[in-house]
Image (cartoon, rainbow, N blue to C red; front, side):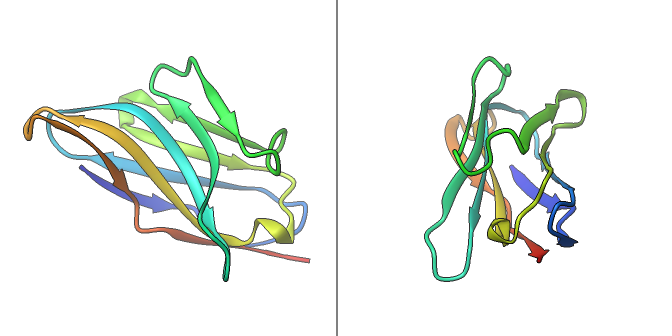
Length: 121
């Protein structure tokens, strides 16, 4: 499957952005989804995680109460709503899905290409 992210950009501190990740392919199902980020000089970190049915979500302590992960099942699109943004949120954001690919008969992780989010002070 392929993942294409959109919605990044430059925003002032305190502002909001919504990232989207469109998942495409044939004959697959999504088991879990994640948003991760990587700031310059730092390791990639998990930001938010959600099971396919929404029964379980997990957030990094640094974004709890400000970010929300969601999914539009009909459009195979996942979202990351980011509110009250801080300069420390500046990073390249990546979406990732754990998919079962019925065509290949295997389960694997698929990553988006990454999208820049810059928060100015």
